[in-house]
Length: 148
Image 1 (cartoon, rainbow, N blue to C red):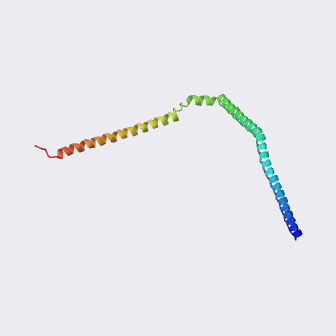
Image 2 (image 1 turned 180 degrees about the horizontal axis):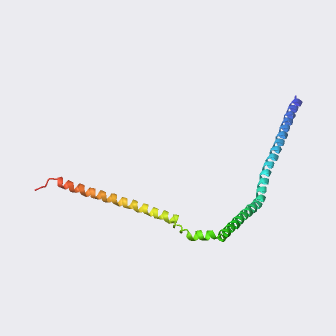
Image 3 (image 1 turned 90 degrees about the vertical axis):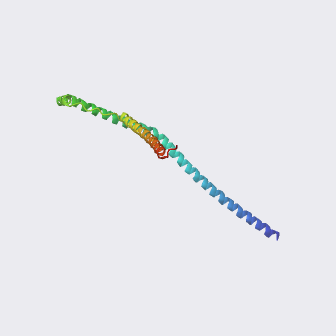
C-alpha cells in the first residue's frame, strides 16, 4: 500500500517536471522571438540613422544644382534680351507700369477704414438713442397737463 502511494507521488512529480520543462521551452521560444523583434526594430533605426546623412547631402546637392541651372539660364536669357536692339527700343517706348499698392499697406488701410466705420456707426447709434430719449421726454412734458 505504501509502495502505491510512492509511485503515485513519483508519477505526479514526473508529470509536474514534464510540464515545467514544456513551460520553460515555451518561455525560451517566446524570449527568442521577443529579442528578434526588438533586434529588427533596432536594426531599422540604425539603418535610418545611417541613411539620413547621405539622403540629406543628396537632396542638398540636387537643390544646389537646380538653383545653379536656373541662375545660369536666367543670366543667358537676360544677356540675349540685352543684345537684342528691339528690346531696348521697346523698353524705351513702353510706358512705365502703374505703381501697385503694397499688399500689407493696402490691407492695413482697409482694416483701418473698417474700424473707423464701426466706431462711427456706434457713435451714430448712441446719438440717435440720446435724441430719441430727449424727444420722448419732451413729448411727455408737453402731454402732461399744466398745473396752476
